[in-house]
Length: 289
Image (cartoon, rainbow, N blue to C red; front, side):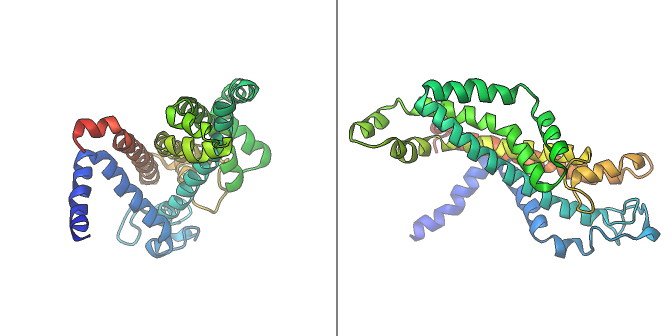
């Protein structure tokens, strides 16, 4: 037990050396998650509090990121904006993955008519429109709000997960251990839950990390267009929209929320790339892990 415990730091250090970008992404995500969880203590002020006497103040000791055109603290709004972005990322990927996992599993496992309906007609119908355009149309029809935004982005993104799951199920279901389980009397549900799904988790994890990056970027885009979470709730996209008219005289209003979006997207992408390499057995064999 002691030997195993003592080897954990060295194993962790070796993973960090072999996947530095993934480690960097993980650190950034931990910082963003910490900011989101402890926003009331870190922000120090209410992000929606107006102070017209302190409009467009440059960054200083009193206001680390300056203030916007209504005197609201930009640092507080940036910190609270992390809550919305991370919530949207996790919720959208969870919902998209759940829908894609169910439909992709049905299409890949049963094939035939089910595969034709899901993979040819339903998937192509959703792919016929750009995902962001479909999300814009959905939110514009039902009204801008956080739940509608999450559902809209999930509807725009489930097809990628469904097609990935279908391809993986088609590959795994023909392997010997699945055929052996079937010959021993295992039913379809048992085959899916016990033998197929555990063997297709790795690519889904990588796709989920990339999907979270896309969800953060899409949420910022919709909020910039006024179709995201409505004021006074602070979001990074809405902050960029508000800063357009002050781009040249107060560039810090654009700089801080744009850097937050970029860091969040890069962190998820770095983590996804690192997970892809770490979970690939061929990489392990080459590196001698």
